[in-house]
View 1: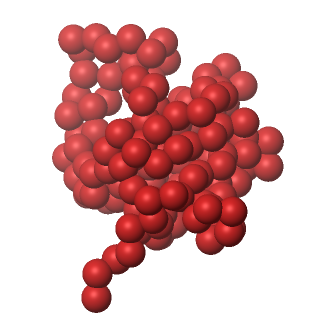
View 2: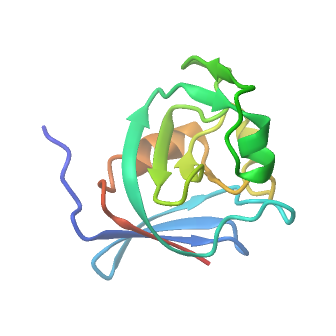
Length: 141
């Protein structure tokens, strides 16, 4: 069977409660625990859009981007797999360098410890990708 398309899905990210909520219209579909940005590198508060989603993504490890939001020429491309820092999914937002993604470190879920992204356990990231579509709204508060 084909996965349904949720054209009207909206994601709400509560950075205080460390939760990601998926709504279809006004109906709550799922709630997942997350790791939002840290105090020094918080998740960007606002309304964003999902620009794309990649399953088993490559990860561009760039300390300039991670720490300052600026791409540098000094980086490493980490291949997909169990050691990839963004896990099994990358959903990029229309805020450069910020996305919703999995993790190779599920024990970090529930803490404020990311570099501004919204981090999910891989098993939750795999479910989220089937509940939302490119173009859906993400509200981070």
